[in-house]
Image 1: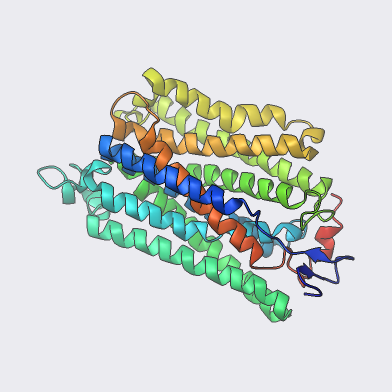
Image 2: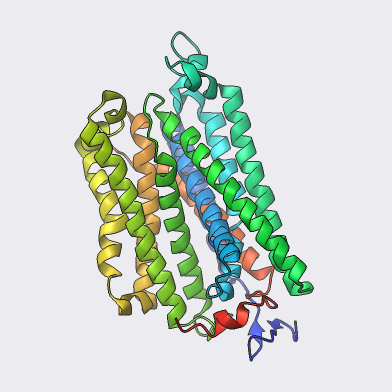
Length: 407
């Protein structure tokens, strides 16, 4: 740090101003928190099950953003890709959302219990029998084992979030090849743990809401939506931090925006590929134990949301981002990213709400309250993460390549 509120790096020819959260942000956070708490209380009194389902959606949304950010950085770290190095502090600020979102999920599970997961209810044909199921499913869906796995997922995410951030910031204080190698090794290990825990958590927290249903690609489907929403937030942060007078002004250019646009385009299409693969195979085979998931989602108001899910997460982004100028236009990218965040919420809602509501879709205080609380938590955590470190990894050997990226 060369002067009050600024940093210098050999890869950047000018002082980099430190990030400072907007003075009004704390008021926005408190307003969202109070509104969210009030709405959640009202919704919970009217329908506790809907409130716990809304909290589960909000927790999964937040945890997904943190996990996607960690995966984004780890993949670039392991592959040696340099173009995104200048952006790295943006996803790093999202890391704490992984364990915090996981804690919200744990709260929803503990409070919701049998109202969310029918196999938790004691009685004939349920409880330890996984709602009438036997074999491995009956063993896997034991409440004690279920809670132990949930706590393990959250703990592992918290450990890796702290470790990856500490290794990244250690390079600023004392740059060395040893620190870089340690970051690479930790990133490799995290990607393995990420793949296993994310797939298991998707089965535990979402698929077991309907314990008789199963899909062999549900973990991949969950990853595709999670990573797409994480890319959307990283894009929004990159655009915000590169505005005039912002810390990354002049460091993030058209080439970076183009690459982010290409990633949004690619993973939107990947999400649609997995969405269609899961639906088409189940539709084609027409087996009752598989179609039980889609039948309620293709009737009444759910059918509209089912189609809207595909349009929001793929149809509109695909058409808008087809051209190269659109991928380089910050306004277009911001709007597509915001649309994809809404799409992630819609995707989670369509996955979670039908077995809880047992009727037509409804969005009210029980759904919006937890969402507002999650937004307040994110707006409280992320700016503090950005302010706690230099805006760029000052001594990273790939920073110069990233600053001068013209791909």
